[in-house]
Structure formats: structure tokens, C-alpha cells
Length: 350
Image (cartoon, rainbow, N blue to C red; front, side, top):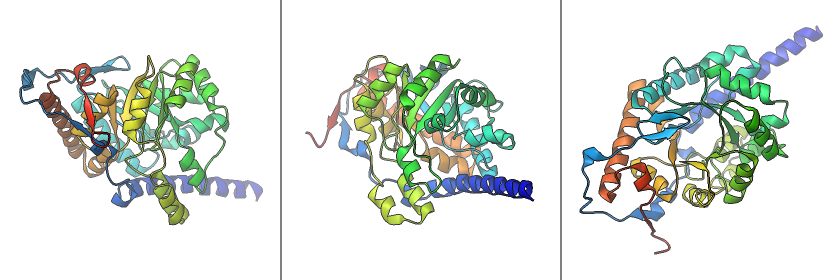
């Protein structure tokens, strides 16, 4: 009888986790879960009427994780672990491979604990040539995970890097959240020194400060994804799940706006910066690069497209790439390196 109760409880927990992942997808697709108004609207390029370059001469290619990308774009880490997530990840992988951009996956924690969920993350056969990023919550290093589990996440999907996502606000608001974030910088640094692939550290929507980035760099982490305020509000999503909408609105725009996070991180030598958080189009991607990002991550726009079809996800990647190229043409930047040198005007500061 006792064994049956334990088995039933485990099944209930597994079902609850799958329901949570499905609920996350459904809520993230809703417009009301977004932070409305782009912080990138505060910045403007100066139009160059005589760019002195040819549109066809613009080169968007960059190197990331030892592979050549056709454009400086990353489909940000989002989902996995459910039938719906499998379909979405497959559509995203097809888009990444066809357009030559990088792709990250959602947290693989449950797939490590439950092998039946592994298939929803395995996209290498659909994206054989582009960088794929594995993903675990950094907080799991305080709840039993170590280098073996990190290696398992990488090997599970033949990944080119491992992302540790930081989500203290989300964990604080989740009914099932894990709140011990103590000592994680040292632990992530230790994993980075032992793992066979690079470690990336990213937020999930509240941004990373220059001080935090310096501490991570000192610990041996050299790739940081801002994931700043401006996109999906996980405060709203978790508050909705917890049936406490008031606290969700209180913390809806908590954190560091993406442009400010990028500006703080660009002052740190040796960092590769992924600018993400609320970037919705190629103009905003160009602004992120001009502010100091080496690569641009986008999540919700790709989630909406991939929920429709692989073709829609491919078209989204192509459209953002085209918008980025047109922006570069109109500011006279032949390459991503030249775009990083273009000055932006802050409309607020004048």
C-alpha cells in the first residue's frame, strides 16, 4: 500500500509538471503577459542618405560557439517536456537550420529526472549544422544537480553549450518555486571549468547587471545573455498560475531594461553578449547590436510563429534578418562589427 501511494504521488508530480509546462506555453502566447512598450523606442539611429555601400554587400555572418551563423540571431530557450513542446521545438529547429541561426531549448531538468521526456528536446537531426544550447536552471545546483547532470543535459541533445538560466523572481512567485540562490556564482564557475562545452548564463526577463556579469566573468563565465525587461513577464505568468494577479502586476516590469543591461555588460572586457528581452523586429535587433550585443536572442515572436508551423517560423527568421539588413544599409554598416560602432541617439537624454 505504501509503495502504491509513493507511485501515485510521483505520477501526480509528473503530471503537474507537464501541466505547468503546457500552461507556460499557453500563457506566454498571450499578449497580456507581455511588458508593453519597447525600451528600444528610447533609442534612434541617424539615417544615412548616402550609405556608400551596396545592399548586396552587407554581410550578416558571425561566429558563435565555433560555428558560422548566417545572421547574428538566436532563437532563445523556451520549452520542452510536453507533446506540444515537441512540435514547437521541431518547428523551431527546422527554422534555425534553414536560416542558419542558433537555437536554445527549454529547461531539461525534468528530462534528466524522467527519460520519457527526452525526445521533446532532441532536435539535432533537424538542425545538424547550427549551434544548439542545452538549458538548466542555475538554482538546480543547490538542489542536487552537479557536473554529471550538466553533462547529461549537453549529451542528451548533442549541444554546443550549456545555458544556466537565472530566475529568482519567477521562483519566488511560483507555487512550486525553489528559492535557494546562495553560492551559485562559484558553483557555475566550477561547472564551467569542468564542462567540455562553454557555459552561458542568462536571465529569463529581469536582466543582468554589470556587477553580476563581472562576478560571473571572474568565475570563468564568458558568455552572458541579458534577457532584460521588455518581453514576456514571468511575474504575470506565475501570478496567473498562483491566482494572485495583484502581485503579478506589482512585479510585472521588475528588473533591468534590455538596452541598459547591454550597455552595462559592454564595459566588461572579454564577454560575448547575447542581447535579448523584448526584441521584436530587425530594427530593435540592430539597436541591441549597436548598444554592444554580439548576438540577438528572440523568444516570443518565434514561439508564436512555431506554434503555427515550421514554415511560419522560417518566415519569421527570414523577415527579422531582412529587417536587420535593411537597417544596416540605412546606417551604412557593412558588417555586424561595423554596426557595433554605429552611434545611437537616446531620445530621452537628447
